[in-house]
Image 1: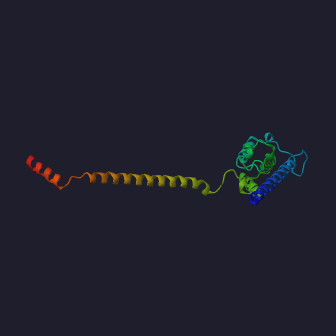
Image 2 (image 1 turned 135 degrees about the vertical axis):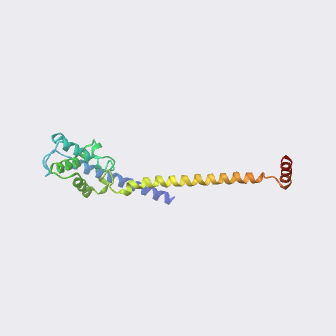
Image 3 (image 1 turned 90 degrees about the vertical axis):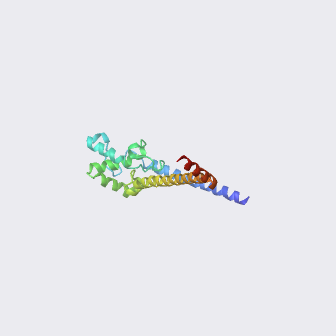
Length: 182
């Protein structure tokens, strides 16, 4: 019984800690949202005020960057995040585009600020090679299993034929009949 009580107490404490952590994150997001005042970031850039090329470029960069909102758990790209939580990241990217930074520089800045989890598309070859290696490995295992089954079936057929071979008397009778036919 004491174990159950201890487990229940730990469960309640853990739930409360999770609730407090969630409230703190929610509060930080609420207080971090744009309140209409300039906080040293300059004027707000509107996507429609940019040239067509810069708009396309901004959308392309947004599709490579994950929204840092803790409520979404890094699950949406900036291009697919309709919530206001992505506005700060989008504004930073728009300012960097206006400042003339390249896409690679912008993405590098995002990684510097948020870590590699901000990238929607990993840039290491292992990430792309691993599924292909896994697929070929599975095909190889399947091939070996099929080959093993085929060999077992052939061995079973051969042993079955060996069981029905005629004995010595039958062979001599067949040979005698063949001599008579010649």
